Length: 327
Image (cartoon, rainbow, N blue to C red):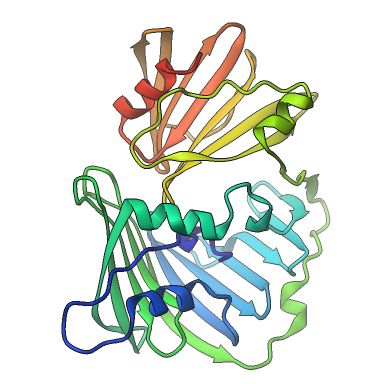
């Protein structure tokens, strides 16, 4: 599933109300690549922005994020092989390979198994979204029964037409809503081709180099992993990113739906997570900096001449406990 804001996979239990479809079938069909092209308009809240999306099977996408004036602020064009990300304000474009989850060490089937172990989900009638009848899915963490996600799935086409994501405390984090949807049998191929406008700075985005832990050690890399993980989370993948002349190790831990990232690099490593208020926190291994962002909490610290940054939609205390278990 290409659209980052509805990337999550879900585990569903059978419906308990009357006669309805098998919930597992609803799930599996919603995860398949659509067999027909479409054009859509969406509202993403926050920040309350409009987005325009085009899709053509098997894997061509065009996404336009509009500013309040209705002009294209950011553009993502993917022809199935190359993905372009263009920021009109910065006049900057990033070019790289299309994302492919198959190359992750924890594949879709394994991720689905994790989800099955950690979450419960109910299915019920979901009314109309963008004028189309839907099923509504509610996903809850088995531990604590906290609501994590709501999805509205098109009954006929199995598209996710509305999603609501919730924070660990139960508050709404993000809502994505299809306001208009039109199915198109044949798309204009030119819509999935991007040429940087004159004066655009083009940056080549390196493809992630996914490695198993033993491969990383053979290559001379020794990632420092936390000895403690929150309930349901397991090691998912490790990739190596280039930042200038330095290498950054990126380890991901997943419970099948949510992910926690651990970045490790030189003591000079800095990553931009936007402007947010920071606070100093005391860790058993020294001092750290905690930042709350739209994507979740960010905890950074330096130890043994290395810089570490944890990012996840989990509580600050969870990140602190993970950080203190990194040896």
